[in-house]
Image 1 (cartoon, helix red, strand yellow):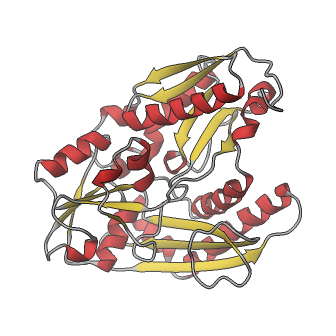
Image 2 (cartoon, rainbow, N blue to C red):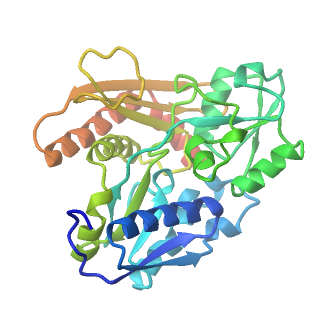
Length: 335
């Protein structure tokens, strides 16, 4: 069983939503753990969340993506589940008392996918074309780049959204690249939006595992799944969002990479010890799009580097606030 320590726990229960993508995520973590601990019994506790039930209202109006995790967290409070597996971009910036994100997994593609049955990329869309997305972040950046396009709200799981595209309700839709890849729908991706056009959401492409604080047996069990370099990048992104008091469903984008000191572009090469964070805040209609970035050299221990990443997120958030991000967000929070 390699060098992995034999776990104290014999059974582990994973809380998950029932959508195909959520089940893939939970099964992926289950399978990784079983590869490490083949004698364990791992069960999936399948839950229908409030966010899954309300499909006719934009997320921003009903509480944001936190609606997809509350019931999973309650299952951990009730000790019906030991962990919950999340797409990190869906996890609120402030966790409930007594719960923690113990593991940040290696990040998959962070980009947004352009999906269309007619056009190859966003530049090919004709004036007035209808683009579907549930994300204010995507909406504000797409409208800033192509103000002539129409943005129409798109809710539901991946299959539902693709069905609406296929029914002709949209000329194109925008989905997370990683989500489509995980459920083997790569063929639907016509291309990935350039991050200079549409900077990713905080945590996009990353899976995170939530569990009860102080649950040392679970922490030890999960430790081999943690990616420390991904963790540093994601801490910076979440710190930016948290400092802006942003939820999951706001026009805020943030993306961090690790680079060599002499890097001049923003390709995701994950090399070196320079942490480079970019952030954006925009008006939903694309009329204003604020941009800020900063790069620092990481030093010291993992814990010290995580604190430096957290401060970097705060610093870039402050740059955005100095440019007027607070007014933009206040108008959205208090329409």
